[in-house]
Image (cartoon, rainbow over all chains, first blue to last red; front, side, top):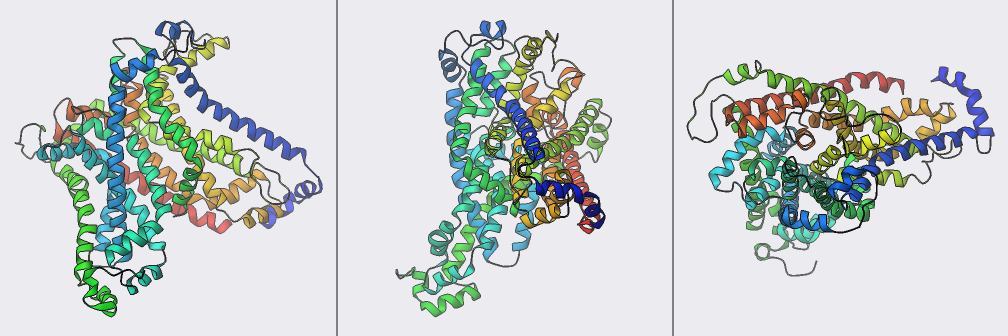
Length: 295
Length: 331
């Protein structure tokens, strides 16, 4: 470091003397330009998709930039009812909603026991959970097909729900484990002295205290499950489709029947609800990411 | 907490309740452990661990997936996989993804994160770039979009005649009329890689911003007093301090690059792309299982995929450890 110091002292000196250096302004301006370019690369495709979702197929082919002739909802009606996006949307809400509640509850229970009690085998269970995080989901997919088939749960929403719960469990346990471990143990002890049993201590004291951790994990689980594609395509190929599945099926058909406007509308319907939720809750989400990294 | 305690504890009174914690014997505790650990664990074992274990067994059989009978064929499946040109093609495509995607994504998101966090004034306290939260929020958008939707959307953007890309290039006066970006073996893979990077940069940018903000400000100030410029600070202070975040990002991106199923499936309606130039192992596995009905063979591919993932993760940890020593010494 001494070498570095000697070499660059004059530069640093000048910077500290100046009131607002041109260098700073140049750096700030360059930063803004670079970041703005990236933001444009992110946003423009989304805006273009949104705009195109109001066009007819002819308008789309005529010019990719021209505004739609009329802002009509025809494409949306077609996508929602004829292409089955509406039904799939509702299926997704049910499947993801139920799975999310179950996995948060079961994950919190499991993480709590692992974090606050030591017993024979607790370490093995923890390692098993880690293994589930490391192995690629693909390895399990083919045998899982057989397991669900044997139970009569193949191509059914309950089968999909329980699979979602099982595969989201290791992530949930892993993060909540750290969270419960850091909660002060005195409070649980105080509850025990006041006569609260284990069940009560968990539901009335520890679970409410873990709310910030639960919220972060729930957000990531929601995104992960809502965007899940591989699991439904494998074990629910013949069942009532969820959103990502139906969207994919719709796009595949497009190769034969050309209705690009409806395809854009279907994509928009898929994107908009989560995007709006993100914009509303983005502060919490940014917080969750930083929480995830500090562990 | 002056409410009446549950029955199990009532019998022995308060003292007994505390003691029972150590003895592990009350009904309250036994039922609690049984339910809290039993139910999640049962689901996890049946639907995750059991299939994983079965996979290793099935990979040694000729199971078709539809008949209940199968016989063991030893390592035949593995031997056949490595003489299968299509699988080898898929493997090489995954290797390209594995080399390019994590590297470019990490570098790009690191650059953007650095611009946001240390782009501010060089005087006084270390400041982030002003009005930069907009960029952070916008960059994260793709992470909230299902990968299928991303793939379909970009498939349309790359469309030769009605797509946004050719439209923009033509408007700039470049003649790319009817160039099929995804239909050409030269460009299909690189266009897919761009889409994947587009989908991931925002998330890792936010991750790195959080990491950089966690670095004590004194470190930056010390570097500044020592006369380090912005670039020097980024290389010698920021990167070493968030190297664990970078390692995590690299492992996750690598695992993803070895999969890449969703993007490739949704970008290319004709699976595999032009001349299989974008075929990936996971797609090959999927077809082998569910279209050709060779479940044994497909699980063998899964095992190879899993081994590749473990190998890559191990490699990243090793590299971080080896370089970590020297970097730590320099600080």
